[in-house]
Length: 317
Length: 243
Image (cartoon, rainbow over the protein chains, first blue to last red):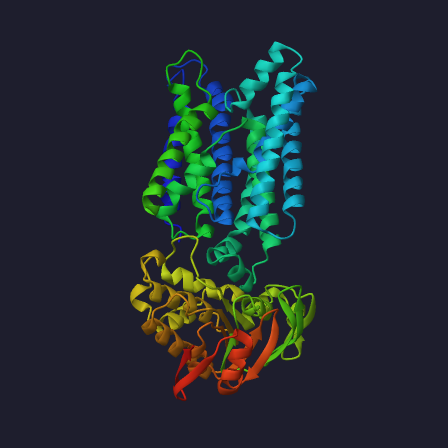
């Protein structure tokens, strides 16, 4: 059952059109000078990239929550995003300005190392506790090393570059970032959909799922690959964009039959929509400097998380 | 096909357990707390690997069977089933079709009819009462039409009426030709409703096996549970008085 998909596609089409027209300059093809250039080289790649990054994060969140059987799981918490960020920060040290490819490349390498560590430590058991702890420790280590790199930045300029980049944004992105992120994210979402059947079995708990023929190690391998590709490529082109993977599956779940397998694709679409709308909004807001996308989403995300906890508390009381 | 435990050992939990389970009847595994009842059941479902010994289905070791094929033959119902996500009853029951990679609506419907769940088919599982939930989780296993149904304390959380309802359903499964193995801690239920018993004692050893009157004699209850007890009533309607 995938009832929300058509609606989400329509909303994305509307938001995409508006996003292309909206910005510091409201495009009017009759009067705006260079309207086609602004459209083709600035707004189109940025809007496409928003869809890709958001889609990856949404799908990753849905699969992660299904795997951990916990509605509070966020794919950013489990080591891969912080490792990708660490990789990106490392590229500043190696003179990222030398090549525009260096930063995303380092970031992807970081995500890959994060995936490998997670797979290695969580091992073949597919147990939730080990996976969670391993992920949190990798995240903690990556965060510490990132702080270390910032504190020892070669100069103030590099430091401000690192800090700004970490906040996550889609400003001034080009088709190059699209070509980096799009194929990886799509393959990642495909990997995540491979977990669907296993995640459904996990509704019944670990033992019953295994008795149904679910192989935990296989599901975990697809999951780590999928999260690594989606979240890793997202961080590589946009920096840290948090909370999408947490919020989106929640908003979408009531419109599905609540099986994890039927949540992955709608969550990808809703994540794409959310990031596109949020990115268009920060562009239109009348601030002197543009509000960073990552900050804007955290400003929405953290209160949402708290509201979620309060609602759960009421449910438990 | 016969399900056979051959000399199963697992450090601290099972000690050389051998037992034969035959299709078409209800076999109960009984024993005091910590005697390894659930461990034995998990081993029979190939959910844990023993240190030594093996479980055979017919002549095939379970460990050598591909997981999907094994899942088609052996259905396992864990204790206190809870659903991680609040899916509809029909979706939950359909999970039982996973070993066949289909959702054969006919089989799912049949399993729901067999357990009187039609009225709840589209309701979220959280809105069901304890007894209804237990039936829904059993229907999930039956939707896969396994040759073996292994259930860990399926009656533990149910009141008397729902216990008897569920036992009636389990009896029907056995009469349909499948083998039913239950972990039971209520000895009177085991005495009155099982066809065959495997009694485990502390340390995971088989203390007795056979027909209920033999395997749950007052003498064996004294040895295994260290309780002086007396059976009263008639065969099929026994009650246990402990002193």
